[in-house]
Each structure stands twice: as structure tokens, then as C-alpha cells.
Length: 177
Ligand code: IMP
Ligand code: MG
Image 1 (cartoon, rainbow, N blue to C red):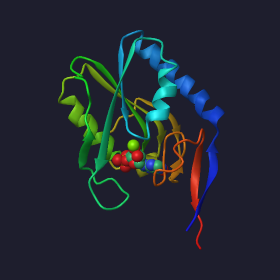
Image 2: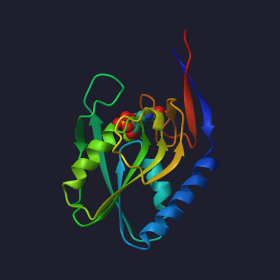
Image 3: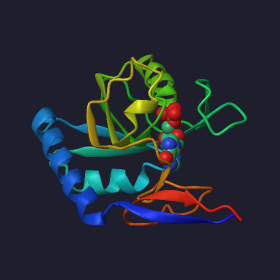
Image 4: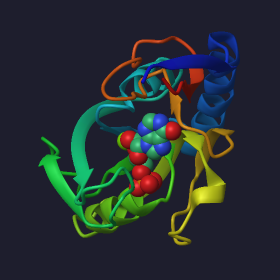
């Protein structure tokens, strides 16, 4: 079975929107230091493009988590594959995600990070599939795009580790045969 990728959001559309969201962030933080935490691996390209547009002092850290379970859907129990290198106590954490689907991963992750005493935690996602949300308590502070319930790739997002390098967001269409 093969698949094709159909354009959903062009590189220009994505970059234009990232610029707008960065301006919102610049206004809100008003020069305060921002500790950006990227959720690997999907959030990498978005985090870089976003960070380039942030005016105040920025630091980076990375975390890799996976949901326990056998299927493609989040189970709501997360396993830390790579923890943060630095302490977040007293810092303004900005969690940077590629996409929020059910919200289970981010819900559990932000609960965990709150126990480490940050000054604040805000969530910034490139894509949001609100129709899929089951965790109502996930509050998304910044989002670039709301998208329909389609499987998307590109700009960091993968299908079986493929397509992360596409400079645009595309919808995967599966061909039978
Ligand atoms: P959830 O919000 O806990 O359901 O899981 C979100 C995670 O699932 C994201 O960070 C992605 O890694 C992955 N994911 C969800 N939807 C897609 C998609 O359309 N394409 C690629 N990965 C996705
Ligand atoms: Mg992810």
C-alpha cells in the first residue's frame, strides 16, 4: 500500500502565521526570558522557525515522550524517553508542540511539569485538531492553525518517520493496492 501527500498549507502560509504568533508571544512576554521546550521530534522545525522570530532572551530544552499502548492513538499514560536537561523552577516555560490531537500527551506532560515549580507554563502548537479533543483541560495559549481530522505530515510531522523535511503541511492519502 502506497501513499501520496496532498498540499494543505503552503510554506508561505505556515511561515506567515508563525510570524503572527511570534508577535503575539513577543507582546505577551514583553522581553521576559522564555524557556522553550520542544517535544521531540515533530516540534523541531516549528520551534526553530518560531524562536527566530522571538525578540527577548530565549533558551531551549528538549523532551521526548511516548504514549503507552499498541495502537496509533494516545493512551493517556506517558513514558519519558528523554527528560529535560535543565531545571525549570521559576522559569517561564513555553511548551512547543507540532500538533494537538486528543490532548492526552500534553495534558499529562503539563501536569508533570507543573510539579517542578515553573513560574508559568504556556502551550504553543503549530496545528490543532479540536474535533479530536478528549482532554478538555488542555488550554492552548497559542495556535497557528486549526485543521480538520486528517492525518498530516511535513514541517516536522511524520508518517512512519517519513516526510518530516517537507517545508509545507500535507494530508496523507492512502492508496489501496
Ligand atoms: P495526542 O494529542 O496525545 O493525541 O497526541 C498528539 C501527538 O500525536 C502529536 O504530538 C503527534 O506526534 C501525533 N499526531 C497526532 N496527529 C498527527 C498527524 O496528523 N500527523 C502526524 N502525527 C500526529
Ligand atoms: Mg508530538
